[in-house]
Amino acid sequence: MARFRRKFCITLLALVLLVLVITVVLTVLTPEDSSFRSPLGSKLFPDRRDDNHVPREDYKNHNQIKMNDTAKSDKDKELEASLRKFPPPNYYLHAFYYTWYGNPKFDGKYIHWNHPQLPHWDSEVAKRYPQETHNPPEDLGSNFYPSLGPYSSRDPSILEAHMHQLRTAAIGVIALSWYPPNMNDDSGEPTDNIVPLLLDVAQKYHIKVAFHIEPYKGRDEVSVYANVKYILEKYGEHPAFFRYRTNTGKLLPLFYVYDSYLMNSEQWAKLLKHTESNGIRGTAYDAVFIALVVEEKHKRDILTAGFDGIYTYFATNEFSYGSTQRHWDSLKAFCDDNNLLFIPSVGPGYIDTSIRPWNFQNTRNRINGKYYETSLRAALEARPDFISITSFNEWHEGTQIETAVPKTSHTVYLDYLPNKPAIYLEITRKWAVLFDGERRKWQE
Image (spheres, one colour):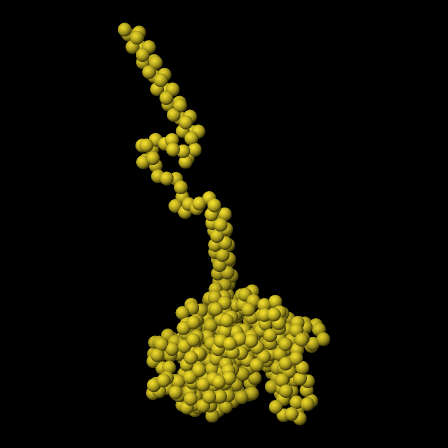
């Protein structure tokens, strides 16, 4: 009997071992999606599929999206790292900016680089000078040659390059030359449709965009109201749209108005005075409006009109009353007395003989950057609210601080030698930091 029990135990043990071996073998050989699963095991272990599981047919697209997102993220990180090498943008330093340039690749033709030579208003003087149209890419309507060549303002890579240069210079705001949709200057094409891309690229570089309203045909108090409404409704919510906190605590857009004197003060008052029922004050479209002061008499007109400040625009010292640097102290005093913002405009020099061959008397030599530094010093000594730069890229008038290069062709171009192409960006950066430091002292 004992022998039988021993044989039975051995046989039973052998059967148990055989079952265990078979189970292990089946487990190893069975695929994950097989229906052969322990009912108990299916409750103990969760489904091993990833929460972000993608159907097999979408796997390639999913990987491509992930790769693109990763590349974009890496590129953004790389950009942020490069921007940390520069001083922070000074939002009290504005540069006038133009998007009216075009070339065949992006626009089907050259725009503005082929600017015609303009006749003198005196017909007798006009006879003595050529009135031809420039012929890019070798012959541009500019006395300097841009390092980026005759570019298109619609080219995303150009906007990227410009924003990088602006950040190099610590400029915080660009004042965009703006015409209403389907309108343009005499030599250009409509440019309002460039604004969305410009805002997006500016935001990547932490640069803000203000609007410089140009004197288009038919501009009056009614159309300006419509312009402001359009700009605010279409672009006002973009993070790159510039707003200024006033001394009353309001956060408002800021608009420069070029040649504001072309409308009389009574017209402007209808828009800018609180007493007018059809005015813009106190509405959702209220803003800070900056008028151009050219003649001394414009000071009172600006006050009567209801503007919030003045700017001088022209880079030619003593070209106008407003652009004459020795007048800036008295202009600042006038603004202080009347609760107006004072924004002097500085420039690296001036030369427009490529498009106005008779206008040599207004040329101002750059003197290897000394003219620019003298202008910046004069502006800073006036203790302005902002400083505006004429300009980042107005190539026709030779006021650009954008990089330029020596160029050899049948057209004789000026250049920045013996300095390097970025000299005016470097000067701007130095004074941007100085201006920021002085502003902090004034506030104290």
